[in-house]
Amino acid sequence: MERNIIVLDTTLRDGEQVPGAKLNVEQKVEFAQQLKRLGVDIIEAGFPASSAGDFQAVQQIARTVGDTVSITALARAVQKDIESVYESIKPAQNPFIHIVLGTSNIHVEKKFNRSKDAVLEMGVEAVKYAKTLLPHVQYSTEDASRSDFEYLWATIEAVVKAGATIINVPDTVGYAVPDEFGELIRKLNERLKNVNPDVLLSVHCHNDLGLATANTLAAIKNGADKMEVTVNGLGERAGNTSLEEVVMSLKVRDNFYHAQTAIRTAELLRTSKLLTLLTGLDVQVNKAITGENAFAHSSGIHQDGLLKDKQVYEIMAPEDVGADSMELILTARSGRHAFKNTVERLGFSTGDSDDFEQLFQKFLVLADAKKEVYDHDVFQLASNHGNHDA
Ligand code: KIV
Ligand code: ZN
Image (cartoon, rainbow, N blue to C red):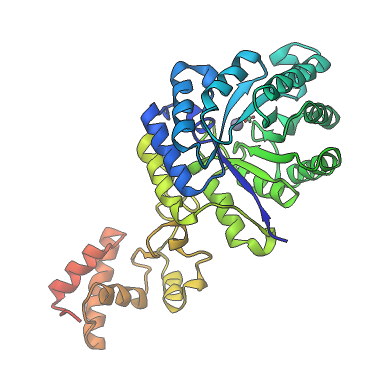
């Protein structure tokens, strides 16, 4: 049976914590509008207790896009933060408060310097207070993947009894590996659904080992209802789970996951480019889905295969993510077939076979010198060679 996976985008909260990625209020609102177009279910708009500017941005986003998109913002397990979240998100139609508190020994001992029972009680009190303000509360067990399982579960059970409606399981430091994280989610899901089947199980992964996408997918396969992601995988250190990678994995491999999102995938590239423009942070050229080379083919063997049938080397259509149709980058390794296709696409006839061979030899000389040959180079080459319009 096909499941719907809820997408929470945290580019404006976790993503924006990256040095150099600071956006002003107008820029955040502009990006939130694009997230709405993209079709995310929830926007985590910021951490309002952190500064007056963040509070204002969250409030503006709640007012501008909070009519159809659910809005949340982050609070530590203290009343002042929770109030600040409530005040900033309340203009939205369907807002909820997000509380975070650590569950790993290292967080309990080093960060809070309290007993495990005292930290758990702090979480329960925070949820009870948030529930006096709004019906929906998300609770994040920070550093869940490095936590003792029974203490993690005791915390989850207690905050659910206190009224939490979403449990978010973060791999805060990107320590988890897919099989292990999937198993953690399977076990938590089994227990959670016994306690309260209406509570949603969510995951939030970081990419320190390059496994955020794989861990999120493993969690979905094992029952997670919701994922927290950022556009371009923007986030602290090696970043967060990339929205576009998980969304397209679910779409392309529906036969394996049987789970879909409400994302309008044709908006993916536009969203990625807007983020680059606003933050000034470039996407690596070979980044899956949104990198400049994601749909560019340069090997002659691949180009030849693609020209016969795109499916030979393409698992998704570039148009599905809002990119131009596949791009063939001509190099000295491109064969005659790819070169001929480009010459004809540019509107030239390829003449008889001797004539074409001469043109191809000129192309090889140019490709050796230039390494990459673009449309305008081929255009010039064919014009100078005396090829006529087809
Ligand atoms: O990485 C993390 O643990 C977080 C939480 C606030 C969800 O960002
Ligand atoms: Zn995070």
